[in-house]
Image (cartoon, rainbow, N blue to C red; front, side, top):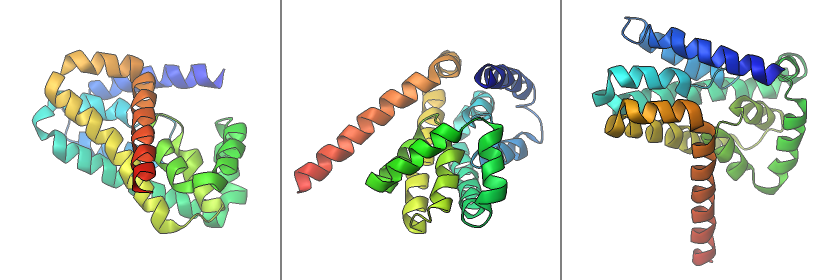
Length: 202
């Protein structure tokens, strides 16, 4: 039920933002969404990034950097919420979105490879906020958290921005509809590539 509501909100938000992508406050809205999605906002940042890129595709590099900066900044905010206020604010956010089971799963996987888990959470459409709050609550090494977040968020937004720059509206429709599948496939390829590199080094 919650997922259906979120999907409905996502579609309504996309249409609302497309109508405002030309406006003077478009970048401010994008900054807000990128920041807040990392800790509490339910709508994926790419839902707001894509309409802006359809208007300003030539500035794709700027928007990729801009979005990554505010998303990671929001991740830092969420991390410290997890460190200092998890029992109050953090639990409320997780409960509100019905992500308690996902939270427990993420926390159990941090024991194996926290960096890789955060990277996957930052790159894919999985709820990044769960990884952020968990990282803070478990006091994952801050530098490792930042690096994984920058790589994951950066790769996601740069990939989307570059695709819109090259293919324009044709790819936008596919990304709106199949972004989850595309992101998971790319994440799988990247993780396999990283593991292969590590094995070759050793």
